[in-house]
Length: 232
Ligand code: DC
Image (cartoon, rainbow, N blue to C red; front, side):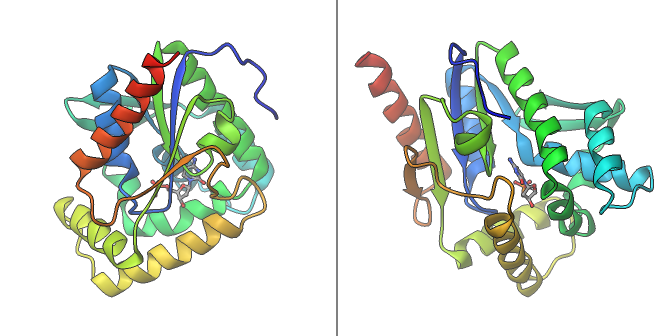
């Protein structure tokens, strides 16, 4: 399902592995430019939750694709916080539970599901004057024509530390070892799956965020975008 419409609005694509800092950074960049922020991982998470609620077998490709086509998933910002709604109910916390996180990769590996969710992401982004999308395949599949592409990365220990902090702040009782294992497993699954694996687009700017603060990365991305806008 190639992306055909090249005359789209301004799209900023941010990809990277879990814990690379892309969510916080993408939110900051969206705020800076007054663009829509689209956390595509939250969409895969919400769909997985919907499948569990409807007792759909997570290996049933057809049923999951049908669900993806009709699922009512809404993303809205409340201040600086992203609220995710499924069938009108707030599921922002539920989609971050560790037990759910472990199941998302099964659903995200199904081509028919991705085709539907990619459609949804393009539609969402095109409605806005500009959008910052973050995920695993934004620069490679969802918006390969995007003018601005970034790939964020960080050393595994730092990614584990960030994830641990984030989950603790959400009130989850997690252990560092469990998180390190989860990140390693998810990286492997995201990078080796057949459909839209996590990969750096050839034209994406690579940023190692290990020793950078969120503000540093937002600044770096904003200035790269600002400079390229000025030179047009
Ligand atoms: O970014 P995250 O950890 O919330 O993503 C949750 C899962 O969804 C993760 O296993 C990878 C998958 N995902 C994906 O396959 N493609 C995307 N564009 C975004 C997330």
